Image 1 (cartoon, rainbow, N blue to C red):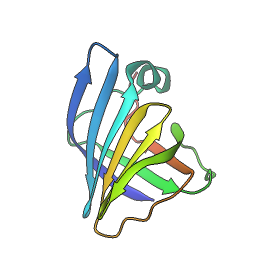
Image 2: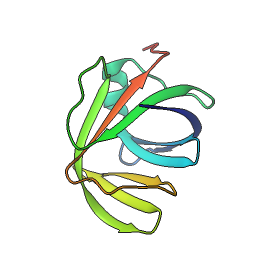
Image 3: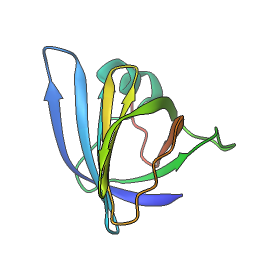
Image 4: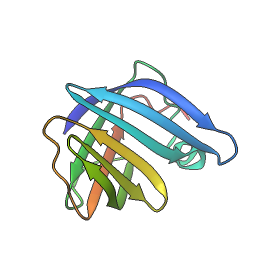
Length: 113
């Protein structure tokens, strides 16, 4: 489990999707999530907010608010793009490991509906 900080947010109004860009150590993640999923879990992401993220090859126990499953779409040195049912997640890290299938677990600290 790694703590990430929300660095930037971009809403795709045409698709009701929020692209959340996060950084944790030397790892950067760009994650697309439907706005409705965020509403359902009671989370309104804000820049500077901390989020716990675990990327694994299996579902982990715990009180995760969001768990996504997907497959690698493309990869190159230090970068993998995963597809979670058409939603994209780009992970950049010097020590990246390609996982197939992949499970992304997300736990937010400040749920505020």
